[in-house]
Image (cartoon, rainbow, N blue to C red):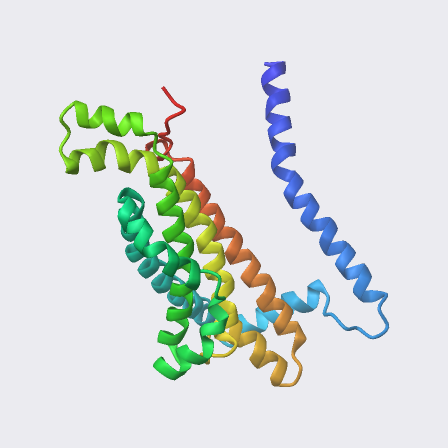
Length: 261
């Protein structure tokens, strides 16, 4: 009983550490703001007041929904196209030789460099932002899928073929379980990139969303309390998205790897 009580207390302390750390940061933030004569940065209470102001005017959920809508469509479209294409390129050596030069040319180009072209093609609106998010996700997911296939030991592929597995069964029994853990990790990282890009895209290409809120608050009377409030909301949502993807990594059905028996 004593050991169980100590274990429970230890687990509670471990869970409280992040909360305590955040509380210390908020206190330091407030102290730094209060000692700054110029008040260049709003304090935590001002940011909280900004969030309440957004809630009162019915803008908070509207802007969050707009940003999540764009991220969802851009991220899903990139995953649907990039992952099958990457698996195919990684599986067939000739396909890799054909597509790799093109991939390496477009991959280093920042998605934000496409903003003028996105506005030219799609105008100012949701489609332009979705297109930019799609570009930011497509190439990382494509390379993740290619590398995941190429890391499959040939002995397992040959064993599947020797047992008479058809191509469809080879994909389901060997390719799918081998690449899935790496794909989930790649999806998690890429979702974070998409959340960063949507904020930048919304500062230029749309008139709603959390990125637009930052620019609009700056231009409409220097409401830096709303700017910081938007930054806090962006960080919290980014954390929640990452936690959601990490939960997929821990699922038993996705833990399969060649290192396991």
